[in-house]
Image (tube, rainbow over all chains, first blue to last red):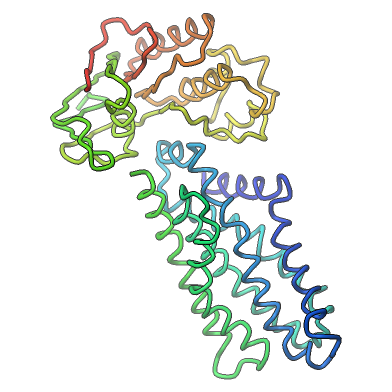
Amino acid sequence: MTGALILRELRLAATGGAALLPLIFFLLVATLFPFAVGPDGPLLARTGGGALWMAALLAALLPIDRLVEPDRANGVLDQLHLKGISEESVAFAKLAGHWLSFGPPLMLAAIPAAALMKLPGDVLVRLELGLLIGTPGLAALTLGVGALTAGLRRSGALAGLLLLPLAVPLLIFGAGYVARGNDGGALQLLGAVSLLLVAGAPFAAGAAIRAGRD
Amino acid sequence: MSDLLALDGVACVRGGRLLFEGLSLRLGPGEAALVRGPNGAGKSSLLRLAAGLLRPAAGNVDCAVAALTDEHLALDERQRLGAALAFWVADAAPGIAAMGLEALAGVPVRMLSTGQRKRAALARVAASGAPLWLLDEPANGLDTDGLARLDAAMAAHRAAGGAILAASHQPIALSEAKTVALG
């Protein structure tokens, strides 16, 4: 059943181009950033990695309101409970499905984005590796905050306020690894933070779904 | 224990307000109960308690595998009805046949009318194979043919050893049903 749930998440992400929105947003930020700081190649190459991590972070905000709330409002979460599937399993399937529709496409979009920022090849490799390790953590945050704010009206701003502070460690270690390489074990710390978020999110989201019924 | 549903001294509090307390009910195979009461008396809450979606403020709820239908359809709007039902039940065909939805299996869920949506929700319950049916206003929006099919499905379910807990303002055919009065 978890497999069917993951497939369902992918199908929902594919319908209506919902999964494309974060990608377009990410590329848009990458396009706008050189306009803002000017066509200074070395400056762009120095700051571009951090800017792309910021863009990835902001792109992770976009799917928050479509991950959990529609399923809560439509009774899907209730019916899954009746089928004997725990809220944690549902949340895990949603996390896996969401990452598959968010992480790898974002890594692909990072290639043209890096070209726009004039990032050298070795920096692009570090950005991609960082995104591979960091995007599961971002997806976990999106899911957790989406579950916490499901059922609230106009929750968009609140969701941003909840998610962005929690994403600070991912941003520090991700951008730090891009800028300076693996000084002080930034990649390992990024992995540790991401793992912590991925391990915790299904339980936090499951508890939030359950609490949301009262 | 052969009871499919056992409520012992159950109390329900919603939004700080006590809806009911000391409610006990047992449903064995073939039995049915009809929940009655004015709007807001806690009929839907009782069904959600039985389904395990709400926790009782006091008392015990012991329940077999249940299928619930309420005002939420819980089918993916963009999918065709047959595929949307197939996500939930291994074999949707008996439910589709019981509710007379054969001609609509290829129609996207978002195109269905109110009554057709109700039939679809009931088709999922009928195909679920769950021994206990929890029906919240199952007759809402159904036409005469739909009502007859609902009655037939409920009778067949009880004859096969299932139990039904229903809340309905419309008359539905539950012969020899217990009555649970709320409010």
